[in-house]
Length: 439
Picture (tube, rainbow, N blue to C red):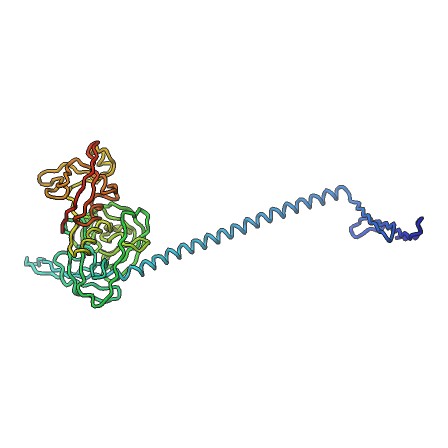
């Protein structure tokens, strides 16, 4: 290194520093300072063309790598959060649904009772002599009024039942029980209503009755009952698997040709227009509630398919709504009666009878022993006749889900309703005052 000192024309001191030394990177550096009072710096880098290309390539690769890495990190992070959020949402959903069933059970349990009844039948012994046999059945009931009315199935308290007891949710057993009424064994509606005559100071909580016409396949439901006659207030959950089911139920677990049995020991029954559910129903559940997620009773558990998995049946609550209202209002077990024999219209029925509509209740031609319109009934007085199709009850269309019997059962005896009737291309509206029947 050399340092030269000289004066410029203004007699200012100029320091010139030059060097041929190389820095640690092997680059040659020279500095020129023309004026100490106003310094000027000039840096020159002597880089080979190959080195410049190499550095530029490294810079570009580094920049692209950083962008890709950041993008991957961002996507990975977002994916992690999304999965975590889904998991949290699923956990919340499961927790919420579970808590909902807990709440329904708490709400309904005070309204669900166990029913025990004795009945006497006769049987023949080995010597051919008949002798009385005492039998006991256990089922479930639903409190429908605070003064002690209880809804159940008729096969829970069949004709001849005596010594009926009701066990409340808190374990209190009430013994002064009477039967307000029950449907006939020939009736497809398997219903009975009991009355607790002495509540022993117990506060009775009636269940909230819902609307079974709003129920759709796939709706979640909860069943509560006295499972197997010994596990009171057993709670199970499932969905509505179907509706409009018609079955013939027989006792003793059914058979291969007739696999359906009442959900408590009882006689053979032809049951129609039932809900099907996969909520577990067992013997002893008969008469218990099938409820929606609002805690409203939309069905009455009544039968099971013994040789299957989770196929149970319940009576839609709308089929007894009119009866419930009548009993609560008057204390009388009276059902509304229109007085016709009908066939629910399905595609095959429409094709067979060449009907102009795909929904409704068709009144086929009868005979002297099985007339289409029963003499002296509301239908006869209104002028209904064979060949008519009832398409509406008031403003509600008659359909496979809401058949004629179900829509009539919504009303109390003596109620005035309007029926829309079609016969061929003719349509008319009739005003009908419903009659009544006790079985």
